[in-house]
Length: 185
Image (cartoon, rainbow, N blue to C red):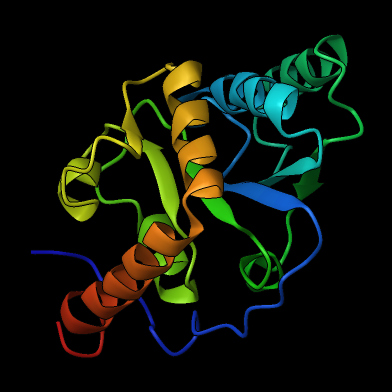
């Protein structure tokens, strides 16, 4: 039995910003593997210096891990391209993100993927829980856990193939409306 989302809540008005914006929505804790997201950001920024990365979620659940992640951003010289936002209204970010990333090492059915699909955002994720099924087993956008290169390749594929991604986004939005509206489950 699939989980669903409030499809009306996540129907955001898209507002394109200059540059290329990549976000991860989640707590800054080891199970979300933020360090892989940071490493993928470094790989992407080497090719796309205009890229900006946002880790959107609480930083206070594991202060030691958050500090490790913050130091990793500094050591990789990403301070100008990577932001830990803390707790924020994700709808504000969903309005302009170009890609949503999930780097978790363990999940069941990540609702954040459904939220992104409904908001019109393509997703790159690790192969956890039922992510592969949710993403139609499309290996261009699915990487093994802790595979920063695979995550970066998915992000760059989205950047390089906007026409193809536009069609994929439409298909994913329809999938959420048809199969994941919590009012009809």
